[in-house]
Length: 318
Image 1 (spheres, rainbow, N blue to C red):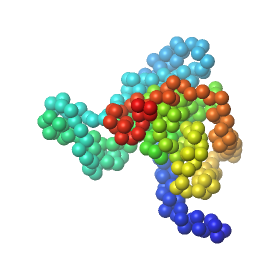
Image 2 (cartoon, rainbow, N blue to C red):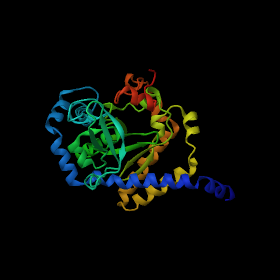
Image 3 (tube, rainbow, N blue to C red):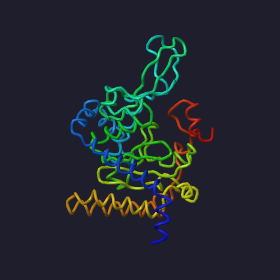
Image 4 (cartoon, rainbow, N blue to C red):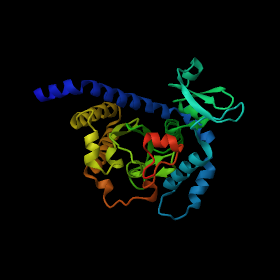
């Protein structure tokens, strides 16, 4: 008891921050279940065309649903969303650079813009506002941004297509999705920025990220999924020094129990058993057994300009 009191005193602020981040993201997952937002996404997605392409893939070892996910991912990357390093100057087409950030206007705050970047043209000197929207419905309209906007809108599109989807928050400043494959009975890593599916080691092995915490969220709770994305257990554990592992595990279990208490008995038990199995597979390394690195897991980040990636340390071996 004394030892726990000492740890609580030392970790107090970090525990408070961790709890805030976990609970706020969990609460946010409800937005992806909004029927009107899902309908808006369905209108944007060429569903019939993607289904045709999925069928045309033929017998490639994947189920139709898994092929449909691959088609959705490719469409989102190639045809729908646009990566933004610097916005285009609408006055002279000159090159622009980020000149700082300002608080959002009321009209921008309506769509959950947390901050607004000010991009200034290096030729004519004009400035353009670039709100960093968090409203996935607004992102269906703007169709642009960086990893935060990409993952946010992609999760909505996945839910609109009926995929069981989670939002993954990486504490080293990246976000992506996971989609549950019924045919494979497991969660598949999906990064729309990279058009990458089931390439979970790309961040550590390819980009060179020093991972620490990664959590997956959906309306049914939270799962600590770091061991899906990291093979370097000893190094990663040393970086997971914000809070004690047992406190973190117990805290997530408590949050999940509160969520599951609202479910029917059969669904509560199903969620409980599925999370238990996933946690066991991740902690024992079962998911990593006999897994060979894919080519896409051995290269640096593709999205973003070179300088931005260099500053973030995501160029990998370059």
